[in-house]
Image (tube, rainbow, N blue to C red; front, side, top):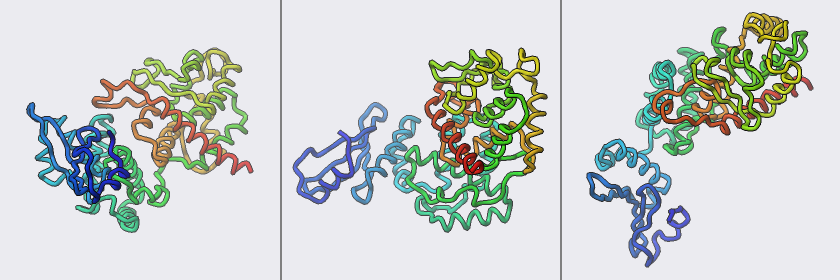
Amino acid sequence: MAISDTKLRSIYGKPYSGPAEITDSDGLGIRITPKGVISFQFRFRWEGKQHRLGLGRYPSLTIREARNMVADLRESVDRGIDPRLMAGSGRAKKKPTVKECLDYWQENYVETSLREKTKALYKSTVIKHMSDAFAGMPIEEIPVRLWVERFTEEEKINPRRARQLLVQLRSAIGWCSRRQFIGTTELMLIQPKDVGVKSSVGEVTLSYNQLAKIWLAIERSRGSTSNKLLHQLLMLYGARNSELRLSVKDEFDREEGVWVVPADKSKTKKMIRRPLFDAADDLLKKAEMTYGNVLFPGPDLKKSMTIAGANRYLGRIQASLGFGEFSAHDFRRTLATRLSEEGVAPHVIEKMLGHELGGVLSVYNKHDWIAEQKAAYELYAEKIFEHIKKISG
């Protein structure tokens, strides 16, 4: 039966005549004395024999902390490491530091799920520059004031990198929190917009306000319907230009609610599955009614438009706005950045971008997180349309 904090409070320090042991899950359990003294324990098999490892007493050790400890100890058993060595070192009993969070994230997500280039990026940025932050201090106990001071120092060194480090660190710590490795941390109170400066040309990340202005400029332009629909969908999906520009009606399955990019149209040479969601589907239906099977045709209305034609159109939109250079590819970076700020899981964003997950996930995990992708796309579209309404009055 599961253990709850309510149950523990009802037992602690009171005369007790119930079962001496109560189990929770994954080997976690409690031993209770007749006087109501509660001790957490971890039961496991090692070299064919059953063992029991004491973790600590309630309430100095909470049920959440005990479950986190057991998750680590269970992982050590699965990896062939005697959990008694881990507990003996004290590693399992202390709250994680920034470095321990980054190590945990790197070992269990970065190294197993991401591409080599992305691994190298994280190692050269957030892992390299933030692992020494507040050495020995539990991350859950670091106040927002100290985080602000740290990133103020980073801004003095490199304002652009400071913002990048915050975005990446928030992503890593958010992942650790979702895995129950840590509890809440005041780092998440700091928004990327409060640190550093925006990226320069070539590393453009657009604001929601800029996206709204681009959307309205597209609607008001004299371009073809094909070009308008293509670039609005590129904004919403964050897809590669060719994936949408060369798409045909049959690739959108409304019964299953997915858009399937065939392997021969994918940069990774692997099929990509993305969800259909209302804002995008409205535009797709308009393209289908206007042009038929070839959704985004060129001037002859028979073949898909060329990349040159698409780029010329967006170039005219860019020139009309006057807030700097941007390209269709920057829509991808913008989607990834904004949704990371909203707390969307990195592996979901990677799937939305059509990236191939690395490590074990690429071999065994064929799940595309369609429901999670859809929720993220809907959130992103909602944010864009909110800003469109503000600008339009």
